[in-house]
Image 1 (cartoon, one colour):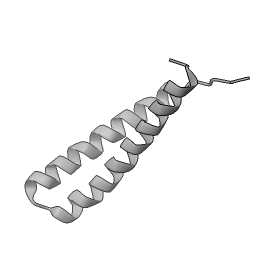
Image 2 (cartoon, one colour; image 1 turned 45 degrees about the vertical axis):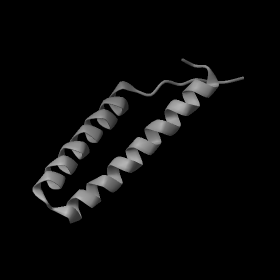
Image 3 (spheres, helix red, strand yellow; image 1 turned 180 degrees about the vertical axis):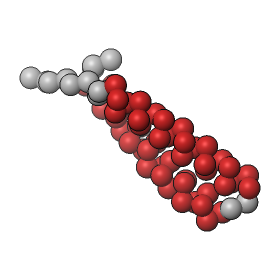
Length: 65
């Protein structure tokens, strides 16, 4: 028996807003030439994008959507 519990709206919104803010800071640092902080924010972005990919793959395999 598969039990599907949707993500609360507040957690989803905080995930989306956090990703957008990290992407904004990454692009500001990248175009400003601040490579250290650009790498710092790139690590956070890669982590979030990897999590998003894994969740998408899980949802597709389980047949929820």
